[in-house]
Length: 279
Image 1 (cartoon, rainbow, N blue to C red):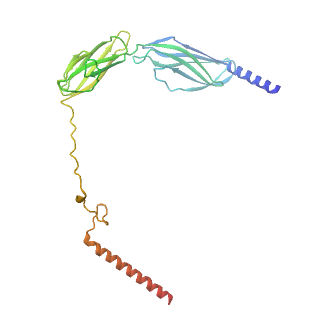
Image 2 (tube, one colour; image 1 turned 60 degrees about the horizontal axis):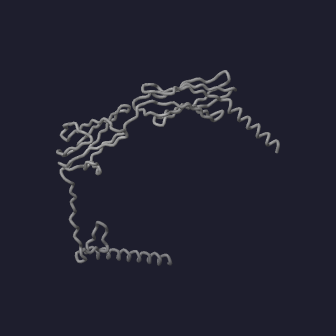
Image 3 (cartoon, helix red, strand yellow; image 1 turned 60 degrees about the vertical axis):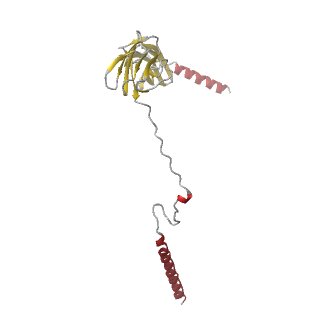
């Protein structure tokens, strides 16, 4: 029992020594702004000579992930690993977010080293235009009748954004409109709204949507009722009628007679051969 306990202590000490042998230092800026390339430097050190497998990574909740590449290198007290991981340039499509620079060590032990940083970018405005049948926009629709009033409304995640919008009519003429606002649907066809929302401290966004105007409600024509067929009107189907093929009544006796003659000839031949065999 004492030997087993001693062996367990030795194993635990060995694991602790191995775990303490790998050290990673990640050097990354606290903040990256639009136009800057996201990158970080790292240094991997070990107090003993060994082979190490590790992966560079960068994790942002609202940014694309890059293809991960696992590296295998030799490392020792006098030969640390120093390198730079380069990600993407922060452009106008990036959202503000907190990210992590990561070094994932796979062997000789499994450990994760990370360092947080921030991407300082303008947030987007969430902006949706609606077309409605009433001024309070309780009934949204994309189809309207000619000469019907059409009401425009919007929803947004920011208060009082600056809005500008244009409406292209079916005849391709374009006019400026107000949102919220209203027009009378004078032309039949497809209308296109192009609306832009902006506000200081936010990205400017543009939305395009379409709606249609028809002359009147579509009429659904009912099919005439199928006339009922009474028993007296139902044609009789011959018992020997195949699908799509009708055998005339006059052909029935001839077919039966041919069948009987063939059977008689067959019977006579069988009897003849039996008698001949007995002789």
